[in-house]
Image 1 (cartoon, rainbow, N blue to C red):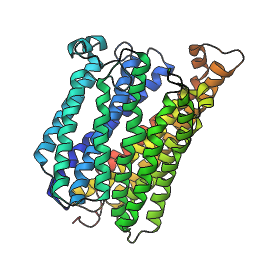
Image 2: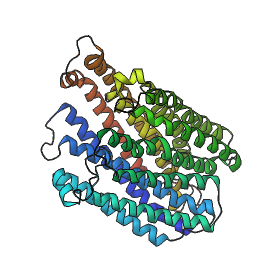
Image 3: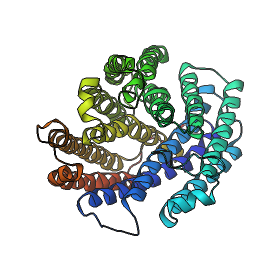
Image 4: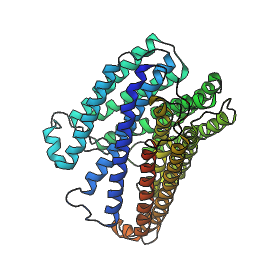
Length: 459
């Protein structure tokens, strides 16, 4: 560890993995509720399990991004963090606020929670992925502003690099677009229009900048390839991501009452969105093939390569499968959407956060890499989770194709719930793959507690 202030990243990483585990557990609960409708009812209704599952996804990734930034920025700027104490304070504020919100979802009826937390003052609750109470949203803004202040002050006093600037651009964009979660117009079309400014412009816009910066940082460290070469690739990926992703927001505007031209704009630019993910895959493999040194952390290298491949498949290929308006007319809101969402989030964002944790945590613990035994376990976890996610995606895709036929395309379409009954076998298979994913995650966590002949001490 080059700078002592990098140590503040450690609790963020630990919290991220703990929340990731919680997300998977609630995903398995939801999976069972698909096939056993009254499972854990009324203690945990399906809508509550879904809120917790998706909110934990968002929060653990944010913890991961914040930890990654606190680890990377001191090295990129070649100076200590502006205020490590402020970073640790915001960690506890964010963790307590997140835990309180989840407990609120589980223990208090949602309407009552809205009443107690000021939703009558400013209505922001009740929208998918943005279900957080007003107080929680305000807390997120405060944490984000302090976090960005801390990093920006560090950047101003140190070296400026392309990776650092792209990362900061992504993080500032994340904060700015979250502000649209406070805007809840009464017109339903306008509501959905601006709702996507948070949801889409996060995951297919500014988050891609964070993804590119994290991947570039790790590849510099594990390959020894010249920074100039990697930064040129980063510029190309960032440009392609922003050009295709921002206008590609239009693929969410097909059927919500917006003008018809969005069907063309959305289709054309969404069809181009796989290009930056393909470039990212080529970038990762190219850098590893041109490596100038053999880094002892083989597991981190594997995660970096996996990020490129799985993000291309999940966000690129599975996104393209149903993004053209004539196809999306039949597929939107089906299990095909769920298939794309699962693999895209895992491949693009879960894997890149695990990549930086896999690289940085051994260094934060005083060594360049974990022992061979620990890394073998970690690589097993990679394959268990990744293969499980591939099967989850395939089962949901099969379910979605059958759902489209039964419910929307057939000459004699059947009602939604009747179609769901026909998909039960795929939901059971998906649940089995989910259990396999959980085992992989537990193996990953266990790998950090495995001893052995440790690699060379970190500088």
